[in-house]
Length: 295
Ligand SMILES: [Mg+2]
Image (cartoon, rainbow, N blue to C red; front, top):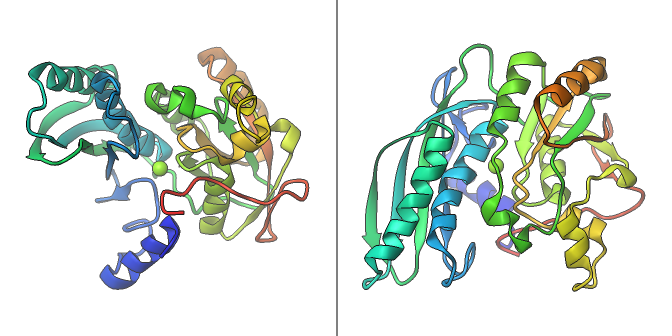
């Protein structure tokens, strides 16, 4: 196995999975029609450096899980936290970690109700989080229709320069969308647009036509491209950990979306293309590439 998708396929084959939406395949799993559960964790040396401020790590532990609930339009409710860390970890380091957890949980009114700790050679920390959709259905990856517009929040690329730890999960934006608009599918961008967009469309059995000049390339993608051999646009496509929302919506609602969005949020919102019935993603002849933990 050499890709995350292949590993997930193997897990599905060996362990089985209830039919969508009750099983593997979305950003969070449905427990019943209203409740969702998700988990995500971070590993020292993979997701953050040994020297990193553990307050940023604690915050990210909560925020990555919030981002997955946001991708399904759920209101976050409560979480269990877990961590393993080396013997000899200082009290002050633990306090930094806990301060980060608490700050992010308070910000989004998540109740921390328990967890577990253990010992390990390096830090591993994560959370299990439960959310709720008050009425209607959660967003899934599988509902995109031909002709829908494809939208993305924020700007993309270069998250390694800091955003990967300090991003704001799009919880408020997701809840606004769920209240006001019939979003047909949604995912949060964790592995890069180049991977997560095809992933979303595969779940919907569709393809996409993307306008490269419309991609909201971040300032950090431009900064990074000066040090790498890649263009800023390549960074916007291939870099992971943007934690923005990518969603599809019928063009009938374009005007309503833009008007209401501008009134409520400073977060950029960009239409980057359209869903097509051919099962391919096209971007002016370019290949799709993203970030994969196992490549
Ligand atoms: Mg996700």
